[in-house]
Length: 275
Image (tube, rainbow, N blue to C red; front, side):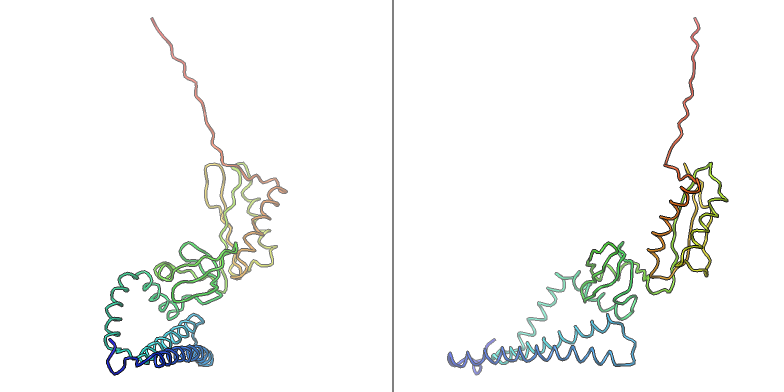
């Protein structure tokens, strides 16, 4: 691997070559940092409507490629014959590829997601059973910020291989709620109270009109579906406000919200013995 002409002649030459090796790595590290900033500025100033995820992906790949080239150049200054080294990298790459299939799948998904733009940083999404705002994304995983302020990290292949619901992508959303009253309650009265609650809420939109319908005759209650339309950012506020107000108004109007219950009827049977 070390050619005769490139063997180190003495300690001084070895120190000099190592110093050159380190200086080349430092220079390419600075160059990679500059390349990342330049790529971000170019993409930001271009007319192409690229998402922040795509910009970060291109920025990261550019910096990595510059560092790989820098490493090869630095190794060549040590007198290494790069041909067998590159061949070894090829064989090692195949072995590592089989060992890191999941990680490579994350990288592949990390490229596909910015390219197709199903979401961007700052969007509220639901994926893999998790609802949260996209805080950060790399080529490997995405970090969400959930409503309860947790920060789950989801691998990209889990995201790309699942259904992605981008809630922020739509200007308005529908809030789905279900409320129940007892069988002895007045259905028309309950519908009127629910309509008043929605009409009084400032964040409930007039168009599309809210929906209030008798939905189900359950085991112990008559269920209503209540579906107001709101701006996307107001979904949870309306959900919590309406739920609280329904309990207060039902109590004030004498509308009973029943507990789950089951009626048991006992039938007494008498047996006559003859003989």
